[in-house]
Length: 207
Figure 1 (cartoon, rainbow, N blue to C red):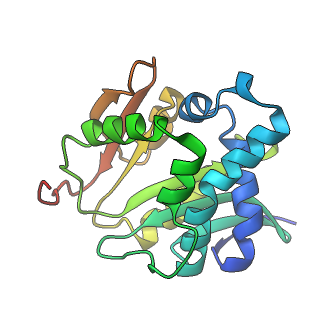
Figure 2 (cartoon, one colour):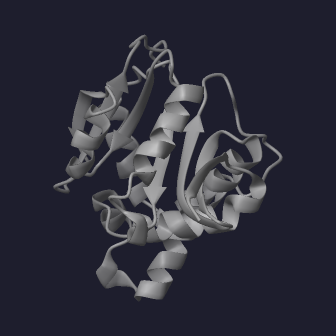
């Protein structure tokens, strides 16, 4: 059976967050947030999944993203944050609370670095690609490209942006018209947060 691309729905949530936890387990930022030496592999994957859980559930409920399906199995997922949309305050847990519980003081370092990478509040006013992940066993099969194309067609026709801490991602996104707009080192680590922008580059007012 071939791979199909569909809009993300709440029923995809558990598989999507499991996929993301496994796909991002070796991402430079996730390695810094959840050092492999601090816990067992199973504990670490659970912590990463919990970290992403509120956002995945929110995007799945809003339907702002896509999944790649091999039959009923989620083998890829992408999630987009759209301008002028907010997460319902009544939905718990909040991503900020979960991140605070898991990360403690490290969350402040991350927030400071991301603010600097976003040019001190100059946040693009276009849709934001929050996450794009593909199952390890399906890498280099074109699934990531299909997910990105689906998101750009639906949300990014007038411009979009993303952030990554993995330099290997740069060439992939550049193929789709993204260009590096800002970079900043995270705290005292050797990790660089890179913002990439595609198309229209208007910015929201500085806070």
